[in-house]
Length: 293
Image (cartoon, rainbow, N blue to C red; front, side, top):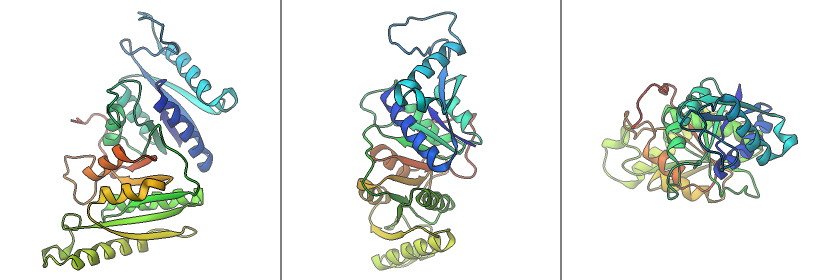
C-alpha cells in the first residue's frame, strides 16, 4: 500500500506533497504523486506553454517531475513515485484511492474560485474516495506538541475514525483529544432521546457514547483526553483544533442523511480548520461511478 498525493503545480499541492512525505516516513511506506491530464487540461511546468494537439502522458510526467523536484528538492524527489492519469482530476484521484493507504490533497488546487476554502476536486474526493483522505490547508503550521483531535458520536464510522486517530498518535507519539458533543440533535439516535429535555440526560448520553467508544478502541501507549462539549459538534472540534496537529472525522455520523455522503459536521471542519483534516470514509463508500451533486 502507498500514500497517493494529488499534484497540479499549485501552492496547495506543494503543501500536500510535503505533508504526504512526512506521513510516509512515519508509516515506513511509499509516496506516489499523481497528476491528471487530458487534451483540454494540459499540464505544463511553465505557464507560457500553449495548447498542443500532440500532448500526452510523457508531457504530463515531465511537468509532474518538475513540480515534485521544485517542491522537495532533487534528493527527496527520488523517493517519490510518479503517475500520470488521463482523466478528470477528481476521478483520477478516486481511482488511485482504491486499495491506497491514504489520499492526500491540497485544500485548493490550481483551478476554482479564490474565495473557496476547499476546491471542488478535493471536496469530490471526500465524497467518494475509497480510503482516508487528508486535506492540507496552505496555512497549516506544525504545533510545538503533537496533538490529534477526533470527533466521536457513536456511529460505526466515528469508531473507525477514533481508531485511525489512535494509531496515528502512536506513530507520532501524540496525545488524542476525543470529543463527544451533546445537544438534542447529536443524541437523537440514542435511547434517551425520548425522555425529558433535561440537559443532564443528553450530557450523560454523550458521556456513555464516549466511554463505550474508548473501551472498544485500542488505546495502548496513547494518552487520551476524553472531552464532552455542549453545543454543535463542528464548533467543538474546530475550537479544539486551534492548536492541533491534525483533526480526524468520519464522512458521516449518526445525524447524517444517507444521500449526504459528507455530513455537515465533517464539511464544516474540512472547510474551516486551519490544520490538516483526515476524513475517514464509511465502509460502504461509493465508487467513482456514483453521482455526486
